[in-house]
Length: 372
Image (cartoon, rainbow, N blue to C red; front, side, top):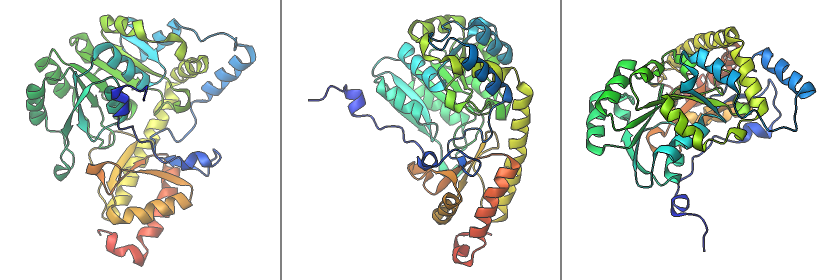
């Protein structure tokens, strides 16, 4: 006898990246490029604020369950009134609350594929029927708005999940495209996951003023460098925010997470400097790959690149791991067999990656895999 419900028993779990990085101590020698985290520590203001809290804060209290100051700072950063904002224990927690609030068992939830797969697992655990819109590998995983519109017209999903820019393909939907989807499908709720917003600079948040069927989710785990704190937020119409608050557990966002997020928002210049460094490093690394005949998928909109190394991936990943550099093989995704996703760090960090990869790709033993 199983006490698990049918949805969980039949669920294909979200597959995480290799755990090998955690088997080593956290040091500058370990370069973790497999989960799209920031490759540098967060703003020094974060450590200072946390140190002050550990010395003088009430560690025996529950976290602030209505942190107006943090909510207002996020509001200012996003350019929306505070009634349109709520913070959560990471954007994954936001997704779970949206699904619990808006989706019933057997409701259709549409996702593109490939994309961030944890959302699919969360939706299925709530009993949703997943409808997959496949991106075409033959056409470099480009998003065809006309075909997608016909797909929505046919399946009429309750909810659509769009990662923008999309992870792992990097493609970015323009606001005009998203606006048309929202207006053409007023009975469908669209989640636009902007985990990589800081790197793309493009947001759908402005559409919230006129489109009630939109929610935007973001995280502090990427550009802000706060992945270990698990803090994210949602932007939506006030009516939706009020509904989400009914089932949000306000005690689940730790005091340290709230303090870290607020301190990071107090140092936007640090964020901008890091994003600028990643942007330069991404451009240089893409040119390095092209020198060996490897072309990246999609557009340069996130802090990652998706590359089809084919048979060369085995030697490359092995060599990188020997140098304590970890990247993400996408072999577990049928459409992406042979592809590898590499998080982009600073120029200095990526030069280290280039040194290891260049040694492999210049080796005559692997010449047959190189496309020069």
